[in-house]
Structures are given as structure tokens and as C-alpha cells.
Amino acid sequence: MKFDRITAIRQHLFAHGHSTIAEIADAVEASEPTVRRDLVLLEGDGVIVRTHGGARIAENTSHEIGFESREQINLAAKRCIAEAAYRRLGPGMSVFLDAGTTVLQLARLIRLSPLELRVFTNCLSVAQHLMTVPEVNITLLGGILRPQNSSMVGPLAEEALSRLWFDTLFLGAGAVGPDCNIYSADPQEARINALMVERTDTSIVLADAEKFGARLTYRVLDVADVTAVISDHTLPAEWSRRLDDKNVQFELAGPL
Image (cartoon, rainbow, N blue to C red; front, side):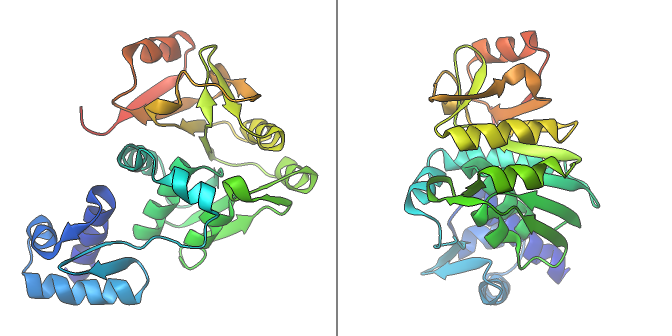
């Protein structure tokens, strides 16, 4: 019962952000003194931060500032997308988590509700979030560190990636242009993203609605080359039609 309650507290804070003791107690159907004791344990594990009268999920403060700032944009939508992506995971899977702020929310959720996974990533922040989770076996690609995206890129990372195969890839997107191409702000990032898609049968793009209709400098690939797209419910109907025309599975996450 205690394990289930603590799991429920973590899931509530992930979904709702900062909450008061009373809100948490009501959500998990426990007394406020019980919730306070649970929060002390969770804080000791580094999972949450207690505040005056409440708590929130602990944030990793070691990110490069640009990455950290982007992570906060459309955070609620990114968390809804992460929850939909998490439901596609199963014990024993081999998955690749790309360097991206929406994919990082999936890593946070795996940390809160661990599964036995083999996780490969080129994202330093993803590795940092998961490295203390016993159930997760994590491999971080080597290469050139690109601080703007907390990512490893370049020939060494590409060579390592070419020797691997994954059950599922979760890929972020800097932009999905009007031409239905996925774009990146960096040429090395674009190159390694395209290679990731070649190393799996199931590639799932995680992108909030604001990424659609934008365009960055470097083309990654056509959206038709991926298996599925998960976005949020603010995605315009026009884009749902475009994805359908491309025969791309899509899921709109979160409340209507």
C-alpha cells in the first residue's frame, strides 16, 4: 500500500506540477501527516523537492542554460506527450531516447515509474536522470558534446550508432516544416537524427503543437519516414490531415 501511495504521489506531481499537501492528500486518498512522511522519503531519494506547504518534482540543475530554458516551454503539453509515449514501453525493451526537451520528460517519467529497459541515448541530461535507476541499463554514446542541446554528436557518435539496433526510437523535433520535413538547428544533430531512424523499425516523434509549421535550417527527414507522431491536442486539424495523408500514425495526448 505504501509503495502504491508513493507511486501515486510521484505520478500526481509529474502530471500536475507543484501541489499543496492538501491537494496531494486528496489525490492519493491519504491523510496529510501520511503524505508529509512520504514526501520526506521522496525528497531523501532526490525525486521531489518539498516547498512551504507543498512539493514539486526535483529538477536537475546541471543542464546547459539554453536547454533548461527550452524545457520549460509548453511544459504541460510535453508531459502529456511523455505520458502517452510511456504507455508504449514494456519491460525488456531496447529503446533509444534522443536529445530533446520532450524526450527528457519521458526520461523523467521512467525515473518516477521505472521499468526494466535497455536505454541508449546521445543526451547527457537523459543519462543523468536515469543513471541512478537500478531497473534501467543505460548506454551513453560518445562523441562531441553539443551544449545547446545537451547532446553527443559527430563521427564517433554516428559510428557507435551504426552498430546498434533498437526496438523503438523516441525522437524529438526542432521543427516540423510546412513541407512536412523535420528540421534541426544544427547540421550534426540533423545527421545523427536521420541515422537514428535507420537503426529501428519503430520511430516515434515527440513534438508539441508549436513545433509544427515552423522551420529550422537543416533538414532531418520527411515525416513520412517515421512510424508515428505524438503531439498534443492543440495541434491544428490541418496537421492531423497531413499526417494521415502521409500514412503516419499519430496520437494527440492530453485533455481535449
